[in-house]
Structures are given as structure tokens and as C-alpha cells.
Length: 243
Image (cartoon, rainbow, N blue to C red; front, side, top):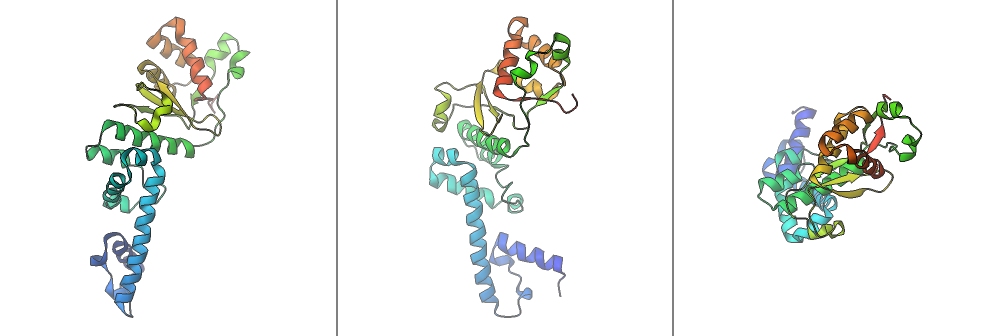
């Protein structure tokens, strides 16, 4: 008699890979009835996985159309490593899958943006730095202020034209998109290449002085503080726990 672990593996293989993997030895009664039940359960799981992708990428679904999106989704979920994923992480590699399948840059960008939205939504809570927090600081304290990137910050480097599903961002395609969640609402901020480079620095600095130095190096002294103020207003900087 197979062990519990072997039995579970055989059962899961049947659900994931179909009737060819049906574990006849596990069922003492009519195996045809057991197989029928497993097929129904497998169809339910497959449908749930397809719906999970559709819910994760509503704009991409609208951009592609239902039939194209559904066919791609079915191919995606039938990969062995995706069959092993739970519903919360099933969409993680969808943008990479689209890249491998030769989809357009706009479609791949849109998938990365929507997954970035989900990551931002589920990221840890944190209090964004506000202009009022630094208004009364003298120069020494301001430059020494320990800061870090907000956990919800996501930066998406765009490679193709914006999808019509993102028409609210304007007619021109930005170089990058910043996703921020300073409060309850998730916001998209179009960025130039320079703004993107400055925003990337937040993850690798420890103080406001470091960020200011990096920004001056990229954009000059005259506008550096203006750039930092914009990032603060977007809610992507927090006081570091080490500060």
C-alpha cells in the first residue's frame, strides 16, 4: 500500500495532469465514478485558475479580447511550475510568459503594470514622509534624516506604446511608470527617464543627504530639491526605522 505522501502526490498529479495519471490503486470501489468526480474537481480548479488570471489582469484582458487572453491563460496555467502555484502567486510570471510567446511590448508592459499594482496593494503598511515632517528641520538634521523607499513603491520601465486601457495617463508614452500607495489609494505617476533614475536611487540610499547628492549628480543643484519634493508628495519616501 502506498504511503500517505505517495498517495497525495498521485492524487495531485491526476488533478493537474489528467486521467492518464489516475491512481487506480487508491480507490477500492468503482474507479470510473472516482475518475468522474476528479474530472469535475479538476475542471473547477482549472476554471478558478483562469478566473484568477482574468481578475489579476483586467486591463490586459480588455486590451487583448477575451478569446486571445483566455487561450494564452490556458497555455500558461498548464505549465508544470504554474500548476504547483497557489492562487495568490499564480500570476507572478505572466509577463515573462508573454515575453517568451512574443507578445507586443504594450501587452507585456501592461501585464507588468497590473502585477505591480497587485504587489503594491499587498505590500506592507508604512507612513509616508510628508513635507511637514521636514519643514522645521535645520540643514544638518535634514541631511542626516534616515529615509527609505515606501514598501508599496514599484517602478516599471516601459518598452512600448501605452495601451489604450491606460488612456488616463495621457496621449504620450512616458519612459517609466511609478506606482505608489501613500494612503489607501494606489496611484500611477508617469516618469521621464531622469525622474525614473532619481526614483530608483531611493532603494539604495540611507539618508536625505545621500538622496540629495545622488539627485544633484543626475540633475544639477538648481532643481535637485524640487525633484525630491515631488517624490515626497507622491508618498514614496518613508522615515527609516533606523533613524
